[in-house]
Length: 611
Image (cartoon, one colour):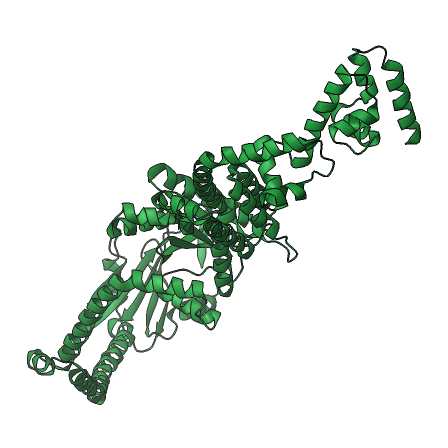
């Protein structure tokens, strides 16, 4: 029962509030609080009087001895020996009602589970240690034989078997020493391999360019081993050819030549970094090849390769005392097509025979059709021989120049260019055999001045060298013949001047008279008079006709006969051709004989009417 005065803050209250609480409900709550534990719970009011209590199990505690211990400020949980048994006391006081709640539990039952768990934990730990020792012994014993076998194997395979066995403290130490020996040997081998890697790399690149790999996988595997990353392309080949290589070899010792070739490759690889990756190597004494790996797609590869070739060529020309001709092959998407690009680049370099030295030549730009024209004909050779016999260097130079200009203006294949190259040289050599012994001996007397035509690297050089060659021959022919040609010339011209009135005079008759061929005599007239025979003869006859027209009143027919023409028709026709006027009008312009004017006009009129 709970009593409360109303009001509660005065001494004289007018009413009392009484509340009754079912003790069974409180006991049920207390019982739930104890649970399975044995103990006693007390509920005290603010005056430390017992309001309710509940005991579970055999717990006999004297409240009168316990309550005095519960003073303000005491510990909420403490141990106390009551009735000769250690008890754990739990105490809490309500701030609202002032009631106190006390739970007394025997201490041994609280720690019983803890002690039980500790015992089990110790037992399990002990059992684990025992099992671990047994398993460790079992596995150690079971694995010792493989380790020992491995140690014996390493000792047998090691050259220092006895040394390692004596130095090793146990099998693991033997294994460790054996492995260290193997590692050290591998380091030595790796060092030697690294030293030889440039040779391996160069050999791989050379075999790749020559197409000596059966499958792309084999080439790719070797590329990975040589440290050359194969990104999948596309790939192209550039050839750098040293111009005037014979002169280059003469001016530089072999060690310097190697440095120069290395410099070419190094410069090319550095420039190639802007577009991908480049791999350079020497393929011949005068050639450095570079494989370009673009490492990407959808780009203007040809323009980039042309730019690389121009930059490398300009750099070498600026910093060294020699020049390069650059050949560029096509770009392909796979490794197996690199040999094809290499052959194309070499072909492009050989085409410097047509394009000249210190140039960048692209294979795609020199491809020609099968119906290309051969620009060196038998007529060219015949014309050169004819001019040579006359000592006409200008005529020879004109023929050679026309051949070279035709070749440059219209691309030809390298095979045709080589044929023309050797044809020109062959003609120059045969030209010597066409000379008479006296002229030949005169030319060969100055043989040290003759060029070595086989050292020429381009058709332009062939043109220059053969031109100089022919010029020397022509000069010697001119000098050799100059002394004897004057008398011979005077004899021929004198005979024509004395017999031009002969209507039967012709080139054939004149050649028989002087034992010469008509062709040679015609060239002779052209060389020494600047006219061919017919033109020279007409000039003499028209000159005579003009004199007769100016000084006489003879008819056209008479003047024609006295000038060497068959009839007046022939005179009029020749006069109009060379003087652009008729004989009659010419006489009018030089009117010396008025009396003969009418007869001449009539005669000319009759002639024109008959025509």
